[in-house]
Amino acid sequence: MDAMLPFTKNTMAWRVNMEPVIALGGGRALLLQVMHPAIAAGVEDHSTFASDPFRRGFRTADIMLKLAFGDAPTSQHQADVLRKMHARVNGEMPNGRRYDALDPDLLLWVWATLVDASLLMYEAGVRSLTDDERERYYEEQKQIAYACGVPQGGCPESYADFRGYFDEVVATKLRVTQTARRVAFAGAHPPLPRPLRATIGAIGTLFTAGLLPAELREPLGYRWTASRDRLLRATFATSRVVVRMTPRPLRYLPNRYLIKRKTPLGWWSGRPIAFPDELSVA
Image 1 (cartoon, rainbow, N blue to C red):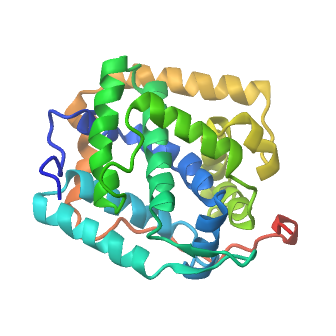
Image 2 (tube, rainbow, N blue to C red):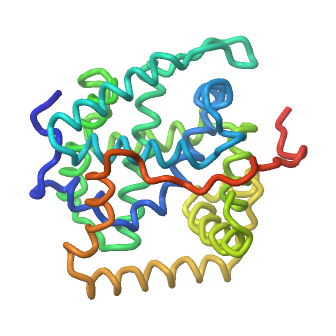
Image 3 (cartoon, one colour):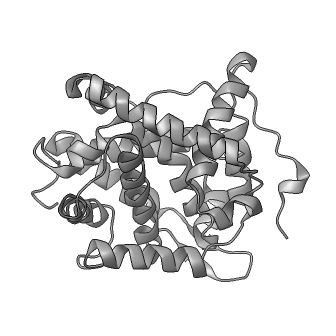
C-alpha cells in the first residue's frame, strides 16, 4: 500500500472527509452507483439489500473511514477486506453480459461517486475550496482508488479530467435500474420505529434528491420544488454557520469515534421493506 495511507492530519483528505456533513452525500453516491447496470446486478445478486438495505451503507462507510484514517495495520486490513468482498461478486446481467466487481471500470466508478459526493458536500456545507485545494484532495484520493483495486494510473489524471469522466458516465452509462428505485424508496421509508421514520426519511430525501443531477430526479420518483430547493440552500447556509462556531476537534469527534470502533456502528433493523410493485423496471 502507498505510504500516503493512512492519511495524516496535514492532508486535504483529513480536512474534508472528517467533517460529519459529508455523510449526507451518501444517498447521492449510492444511487449513482446502482444506476450503473453492472453494479446494480451485483447488488441484487450478492447482497441482502431487500431485507436490510442500510447495513451495506454503514459497512461501506466503516470500511472507507478505517481505510483512509485508521492506523497502518487497520488501513491495510480494510483494503484486504474490500478485495475479498469484491472477489466474490460476479455473475450475469439480465442482458446476458457478465459482470465482475473487480472490473477496474466498475471500481473506478464506485470510487468516483465517493470523491464527487465528498467534495460536493464539503463545499456546500463547510466552505468553498480553492482550485489548488481541490487538486490536492483529488491527488490524495487516488491512493484510495488504488487501495481498492483500481490499477495504478487508472484514475483520470487531473481533477478537470475527473469531472469530464464523471459527467460522461452520468450522461452515457447510467440507467434507471430496479435497484436504484429501491434505494430511493428505502431512503424515503427507512426501517426505523414509526415516530422517526417520516422525519429521517424526509431529511434523507431532501439531501439525496436535491444533490442528484436534475435529469435523474424524476425517473427515480423524486418530486423537486422551488420550496424544497430553498430549504436545502438554507440548510447548507446554516451548516456553514455551525461549522464556523464549532471547534474542529469537536466536529471531528463522531468520525474519530467510528474509526476507533472495532465493529461498524449498528443500525436498527425492523421488518424488511415492502417495495411496491410499481418500482419494478422492465
